[in-house]
Image (cartoon, rainbow, N blue to C red; front, side, top):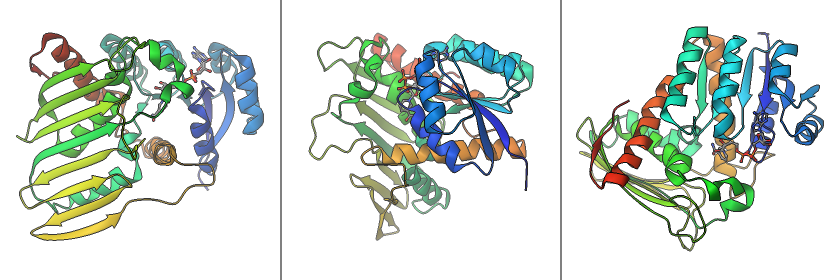
Length: 343
Ligand SMILES: NC(=O)c1ccc[n+]([C@@H]2O[C@H](COP(=O)([O-])OP(=O)(O)OC[C@H]3O[C@@H](n4cnc5c(N)ncnc54)[C@H](O)[C@@H]3O)[C@@H](O)[C@H]2O)c1
């Protein structure tokens, strides 16, 4: 049997339960030896609930005390840079939740620090690891609908995300960084790298600091055009939260992923219908199931890459290209014109 990686986790808040469950599912490869939160009660509660031997209220003390093979950073973005640089100074590989950082410069600093230290860095960009998205990627890679010409990637909801993540209401750069980063990453993965970006943002819900809706048009390097849109203020029935909906057209056919995760694939005039729903895991529940399950796939990918020495799909370096699209979208929305996407 191969050796198990010794891991530490920092940030024991709302979303960390999914990481903790997923590490438990990956116990054959990973031993979670310590958890940390600056709120010590949270750290202790997570350690007790998930049978983690040690807990810390200070990340520097955890790195100084533990001998870690990697760290999983599940804090909100303002702390990412200091924690990733701390990991790099101890030569500990790091996986860090999205959004990578509040600013482009901080993203670069993290990529440089881990590059200089020679340690892997991956962003927990989990949308591309969702089961339905992985199925769609396989179909596109097989060339079933031919050369891609057009796409629409939609993520719209009225679900009360502020209940679990109250900090979102005060983010001045809000939905483009929180969800735009996911759907723009999908645009790259599904339709190819991007040349130009045009974006309009809206603040629909009263009392929030930033934009809660964004509509983005992309020209891809390969000539395809796509529309990517996201909203936290959509009033829909049924509300598809948290499903990503897709329409992709190619020269030989199309692929439509509808609410309920029904996929219709048309190829050379013949249409097949597939259900992309997967069964619940023992620790997942509706409506978060697709998101929760993708955490497991993301963390498994990280472990496989550490084992093989491969660069993760969503390495820090790769995520700069996605983050550059977010920056371009904000610049475009401010200037009301198309801008070049420069990573
Ligand atoms: N990928 C997804 O689908 C998805 C979904 C939800 C949230 N997230 C992301 O997960 C991250 C965490 O979100 P959350 O909702 O769990 O936040 P949260 O505020 O509930 O939890 C974050 C925790 O980190 C702790 N923390 C912050 N700075 C720290 C530091 N320097 N040292 C130790 N502990 C520290 C806080 O005390 C808190 O307990 C965010 O970046 C968010 O965008 C991702």
